[in-house]
Image (cartoon, rainbow, N blue to C red; front, side, top):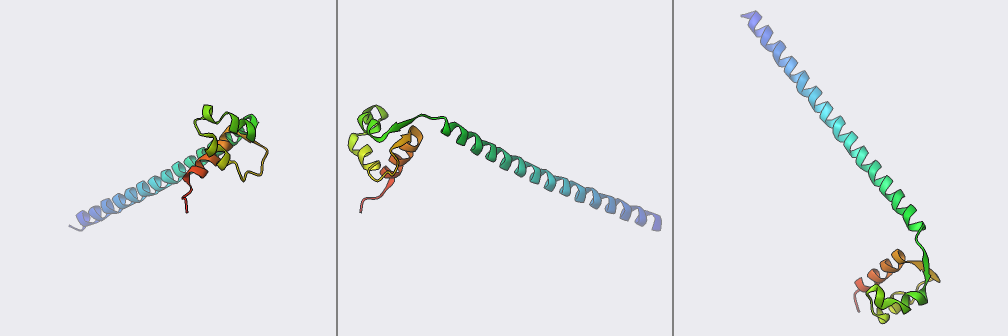
Length: 107
């Protein structure tokens, strides 16, 4: 009877060790996955910044003159760019400023 109890306790110990190792492997896998995701985000950010610098710039007056072609009324573009400190913008910067302007609440 003692042999059976000893064998049962050995099996239970082995089972606990396997479960513990499985848990550790899962935790390590999740950490590696999280690290890979953060690395991918960093690569995406760097890539998007590189693309933006290659974008041509246009004067504020060009954006106002061509506002209809860009899908906005002249009044909206003039309002969005009214307090702009730069004399030239990229299209991405322009669109961000217009969206911010249109998103403001009127008080």
